[in-house]
Image (cartoon, rainbow, N blue to C red):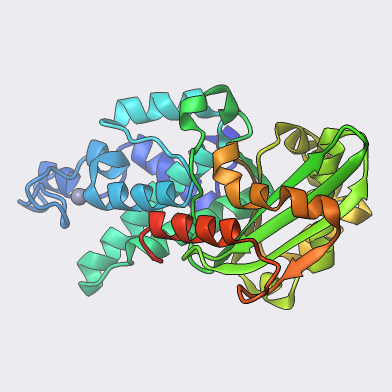
Length: 323
Ligand SMILES: [Zn+2]
């Protein structure tokens, strides 16, 4: 539990769950305090640790939402499998483990609210809260950091960020003659276009070019990005993750961050995420434009936006069912 680096309240909840100290209906019925064994939501299903730890329909709905936003979290059939699964993920998929443990706790809290007030938190608010909790524990989480070893888990399409968040897909391109370009596209949780940028530069190292794409963000950041609940910066180059990892480790250990990355601290929450090339399609489309010079599009009426960009934007928007 300690190694999971959970919020102290969530850690305490899991400690109680592990020690059969959560007053579930099953436990209350067993002690003859009540005669109803079931889950107040799922009714006919027994509310025991297996149910609270993963089987409840509410947990499934929240996890399905998180998956829709690109956070892959496992499902567990029973509590024993859950504990075993979490143990395997420690040190490998810290964000996913943290998200899972937090979901279970928040869903239980919402269940207690349901019993006492007859109302409960919506799936969306639990899922969004979950991400905030997990990110606060590990500033600048490197989502998918180790997941690239398992290609099946890597998303093959663009995922919208949680409500109130902004996702910025960044990319870099390097040609044989040291001509390089960086570009990025920002969208909201409904897949709506917010802005796109590109800039040409001289470079000779592919990983450094990708890093430049992230660094270039500070030139185009608008006030509304700081007001967003959080920002997910997504790229399709693993090297950039390795480079940023060092800076982040330094931030965690010494509270020191390089000047050129300091702007990331101004965002409310930041997640750096690694996606497959097909998840980064829109940024990819601007590749040649970014080699030719700089551009900044803040609305879709801009004449220099290529039709392919608009087509892809619409397609990805339709794919999440909110065009
Ligand atoms: Zn249930």
